[in-house]
Length: 422
Image (tube, rainbow, N blue to C red):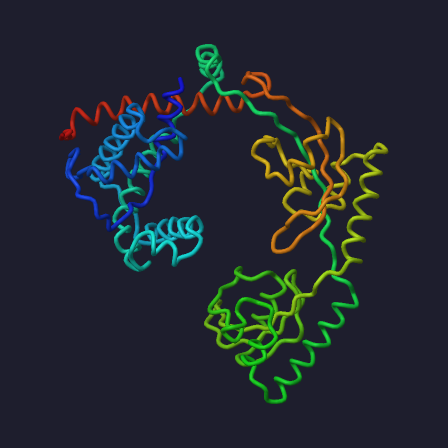
């Protein structure tokens, strides 16, 4: 059981190659027109070990990764036989996303370039073919797996066969919340408006917009004179978009208020539904009174809920989290061991029906305050069909896909040339 769980993980493991390696390579397998090198295998083993939290020298893990890599090359060969294609645009999008993730993990583009020992342009160039192959494999597998489903009887039979080896479900909480975002003090906003109005008057009197942006803007674009580059409809928040698309080239807007603060906008150029603009942003900071008002509102809502009013209805009416308010503030079921410590410390000592005191959280680009309602606290327990049917169903479905995939791979091995060397 544990081994096939690992095999399911390995079937999803793929990563960009560490290009430009200096190790002396040797071919360990040939599959159709593809080769598997020792360095490719070692890299995949290291990556799989991280995913499965196993020792990379474990013989069983090494064997499983090798088999998974051979299977991947067989699927690639079948994709070429079936004339499956992916477009250059699809490759570019996937590669961009992969490289963004790698930069995030490395901490910066410069650090990633140090790790790879080459500039980003070369990393991108040498990784492009590998990304195309990965997308071909993914497309073939997705097409096959899309039609595979499980019946309730199959789920129940799977559970009876493997219930003693299914993972333990960690302690979980069914949670809802109400979020309030502190509003800027009216006096501070008035000061920022007056400052921005003075800047606008200076620009209209002959000052250069770019110079004032560099000097006063709170946005990251300040160093470039507030230049935002080209953007199309949908790229900006509604208030900013309405303002920028109403301007003529070189015209400067009135003061525009968005969730980020107060803006002056200048349209540089427009081409159809795309605009090139620059702006000056003054953030309206929130003072102590802003926080106190938000906390006081949440305390009142907490007392109303504890007094018998529906927490879900209060969330629908007052919460400022647009994604959850429509479902009564429902945050779903959250495992305690996957919460960050700050949030875990809030709910850890709460029981069914309890509501936390207001506490601060990061929200979007700023922060807010929330109260959390524990609808149900679910202790750690063995997985069962009553409480965890969806979990069991997903594992059963993955098991079925793995079994059918292995049968398909065995069929490919009988018609596509492959061999292991050394």
